[in-house]
Length: 248
Image (cartoon, rainbow, N blue to C red; front, side, top):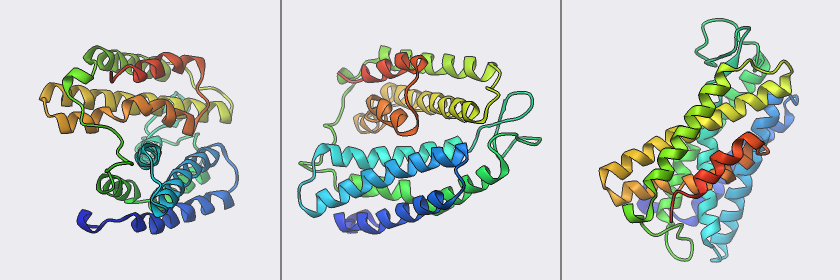
């Protein structure tokens, strides 16, 4: 999809792709991972549909444009979530685990793989559309400069995410299936946050305002992402508050 040819109409077939993936999840047995993926799929289709309708009516606002980027982030998160599992000793890599994985179960892993295959390329296409449509009144943000960004807040966010990730993976996983799924969702979110905080630090050090804008603008919206996948628990509040303090 060349950027020069992108219009709001390109959102409609992308919405269809997301909806078909969600429909398949709704037809699958309601295991913990499937319920998580349904929640992700519902978030993605909702944000995409809202944006498509708004652009079609020439009534797009900043929230619709941001919604497209949120949907892309959630799809990236869904891919990252596949990389964690639980075996008899604790948390391990999902598909790359050396031995049998107790959670997610085989049927859940299969459903996850099918979902990722169904939405393959969608998050990249969403970012292309969002970039091409990034104009008033849908503009997400003005370009950031180092003066608009708190390096201390980014460092604090990275430190907190790393601490939560280390402490969480060192603890024994819950015994019940729903508890294990909630723990994997949370630990994936911590890793996701750490990766983005480190990318923002690199962009800040590099002095490229365009790269800085791309790297930083998702950080204050991390609370939106977490609420898309789970109800924030008390241990997440510090992380989310730090995320809100990134940009002046």
